[in-house]
Image (tube, rainbow, N blue to C red; front, side, top):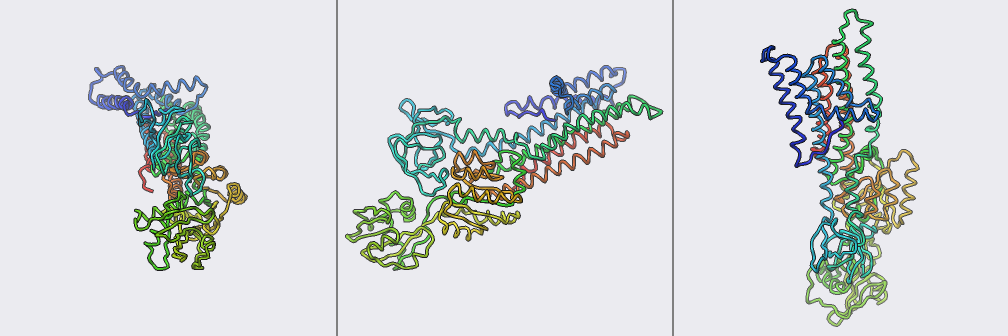
Length: 630
């Protein structure tokens, strides 16, 4: 049961038509068997009728069987079905022969439908990534698909839009959110002639860039290719079933042959037709369709369910591996945090935090630094009463300017010490990035800024622990004090800061030295790629993640939500349970009816149930994962 094809929307009727015709003719034949007199509806007419009913569903299988035999593959499910159904015709069991092939085809349609549903779910993931480019042609900007843009063409990207293709910046400059590429939360200023990469987000100005790579070389095309080939990477259980079928199929051929011929030497009232019928029943029952199809379909259903939840598994083998993960190692910036600075706290000496924020925003509005942008964004619309003048940067310290003729300072503690301005000693104990404000030689207060954790970060750690993952580790290039503070807040088991990419790899190697550890690493930037490759399961944050991280990773979380890690584990465990259910169900039912068939207690209709019925039930069980809510 493996020759199922994708159901194209425009040609669905052509796919369903053969089964529909065969079903109508079979049903009509069964009615005619009981209603019409033999003189009119004799054996020849009856045989012709059932041959016509058989051909729409039987010909494709017979053709596939012939091609495989021509390729010296004699023992396969197509040969089994062909011999069993043709044998049924040979001994006059025409309806059974048609029914076996008809239900076989219906099973394929179920399988094709299930596979297509899973593929649609997977491909729908890609809709959240950039799907258009604004290209300059004949003096006009046109919105086109990225596939249509050629190398050397000029495209425009507005503020807030993600760069759809790699290129070089032209006649402009802007700030870009590059956290997906570098792991750093600070936006990067890129000027004319410098490279801009797909995945960066333009923050400031409308920009133009010359395209340097085709769409086919972009992360989008690579991910789509990964989706289309995800099912090629088999799980261990799936590979085991395939190997089992290669041994099992020729074995049942010879057992069926023995069941036909051996009784001649043992049974006194031997009737060839009776034992041939039993052998044919045995062949139909023994067809490994339910196992060969339902097991990979179970995994494919899991891949589809994951995609529906914004998670891309690049192969069934990673679904299997995910069920064994007991250690999760995570990057901080962009994985557990948003990767952007935000104001956390405002403390004013005179308790007027609104005034302090307005004063800070007045001077910080002259800077493009991400800390300055965080403060001006927090302050909102500029207050005309607070208009700073003669603002200048004091390198390594902060900003100095004038407000109403008085000196206004905004910077670190070193800036206030430079001007001999006393400040609250508590400032030195604060872990977050801090901006101190002084006006007219008086300390006014401070503003703390930090890279804010994602809303579901703490939930992610809690849920992982529910799945028995007690070992959660955070590795970050950020300073240790900030990393440890976040780890303590989220409930992470251990945290290490001030790490270079190679130092993250060293930590992973130490963990892998313990063979009991099955490690998942979660990251989003180019700097995380070595760790993603080294781990047992590499998980990339794909919504904002770098091309390198997405390509190296085994699992991609398109929504950038860390809580999806536990969702991925849940889907993997549920999928594995369905696969095991299918294996136990298929083998147990087949063994029972095989024994009944060998002793003559099961008919061809029982064989149809044991083969196609079990396959259909296993397929329906497999697609349950697609409708389950995780």
